[in-house]
Image 1 (tube, one colour):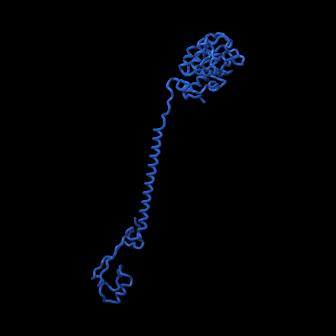
Image 2 (cartoon, rainbow, N blue to C red):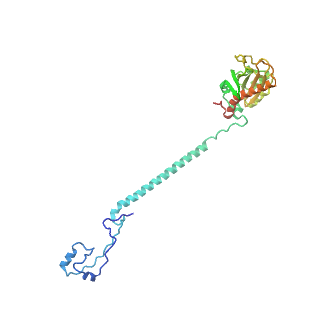
Image 3 (spheres, rainbow, N blue to C red):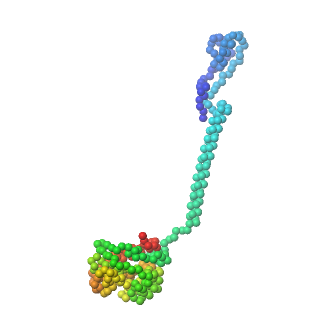
Length: 307
């Protein structure tokens, strides 16, 4: 790491001359380039004088080195070494910082993994959270089960006319066997809603009983019959106000710790023919899928009411 010496840029040196050559040199000849200025004039005046021994010319380097000029080089030299040392300390500090930071984060993550409890898995079985009340503890609501008043499916339209929620389950059930099964199953509520079709030809009630477990809900389902069914919920409109009179069709399903119950009939209460039965079954399927089964599907996944 050097720079040219501005004071001496010559790269040539004058060759040595022998004593004979110096002795025979003309008085006015060329001056010795290594002889001080004025030395030649003094020698002319004092001739003949004894010849001086030759002076060895000094060759100087054309580049500067920190070691050429003693103390002058210490400043740049120490500055350079100091810069290297500072840079080394800076790099070392960065390495230590990143190592300590990374290892700390890794240690914290590892510690969190070791100390954190494992994520809970969903309950086993077809109905998962909805299989038992203890994993699906929140009570049912009318809004959850019957969120909309109007239902349309493939051009078929239905209107909800009335809803009800009771805690005394026997008040919403017909038949001794059903009432006993609901009591044995620790029924805490039955929520019902009644519907009619747009044409005014059919109507019915859908109800859901909240029981302790899938086992007790299965027991409730097993007692369903023509004599044991959900109590039809009459409305105030001209059609559903007569709901429950005449002949109707009943059905029950177990869904986890819930029992889904229905009663559907023609508007005049007459026993439906095959075509009428098909229309009633279609209405039951349309309404229950859009309401109660949709809501219970959400509880199966999370154990909580859907949004």
